[in-house]
Length: 428
Image 1 (cartoon, rainbow, N blue to C red):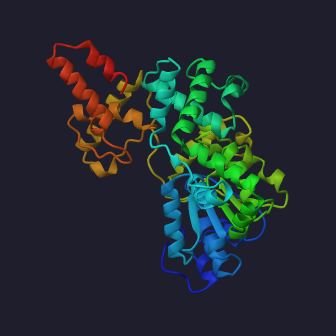
Image 2: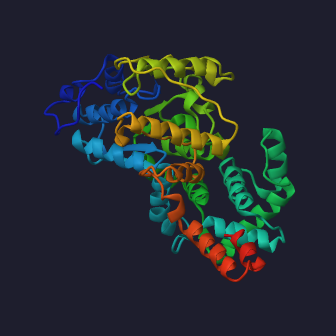
């Protein structure tokens, strides 16, 4: 990728050194609404951090007046680090929840009085207790999915009594009878009230309420933050957009970055519609497309472009045709298996072949979609005696719930197969 990180540049134009033409266009678009359509690996974080740094060094933005919002704490931390290197260390880069929680804690005594409610430590335990109060038994997967449904309902601003109708209207597949989930949802809300706790969705809802019902508070926030940058804008949900609108207060000093084809949180209520409708909402917006892919080889980019070309819906009409900037690599190979265990075994077998041919283990990676899939692959590798390192999650057999289940199973075996121990294992 063009350029590299270094110390604080001595003048505004030095920030632009090493950017490609489209990244430079983003960095110098300092006024009015800006929409950056950026494909994977095109250097979008680089472009928007250099835009902020350029704005600060050019005197257009004060560091403390900029709020950059992204979706993970890791991404926010990375953004803060890059901004510090570029001489814009005073900029706030946070997740939606972190920014909202900070404001809620600061303004609660003034807007509501007293101490703000504390965050619930484990939402899933409260949902489980709510289900028990409703005399509804949930297995582990149903508990996870029901918790997800409650989160979806809250970010789409759906109250318990409206949940069944909302699910039917959205064509969403509920994990259980929607009427049962609505009962659990309502009981969950009552439990939180009884214990004076809130969840992360409440953080956004309460911040929205404080800003809407206290004009003085809203004006103070808007006086503080005059420039907004939103990364991964395709994954904004209705509640986050409502909060963003309150922060902006009708002003157009906002830069959004996203790719409608990369929406990954639709199951939680996210929608690419806000990104797709941005130019309708802001007809005067500057639109920049980042299509130079610095991450993947031409073969991988060609495959990705071909797959996206088959997609339908609104996002497909706005897809980006990426162009690889890397040297050619091997052709991708596609293999189909009957089921996941067969796939894991085939993957382990192929890894063994690569190792036997002299390929270093550090050059081999296995990517899986969810952490829940890792156990199958870990077992397949272990069966062949292939050492591995797990990134971004605990090893399956080292996770607390798996260790506890293992102890119950071993105890049941020693006791001659006590049914009660096995029943308990299913509720872990």
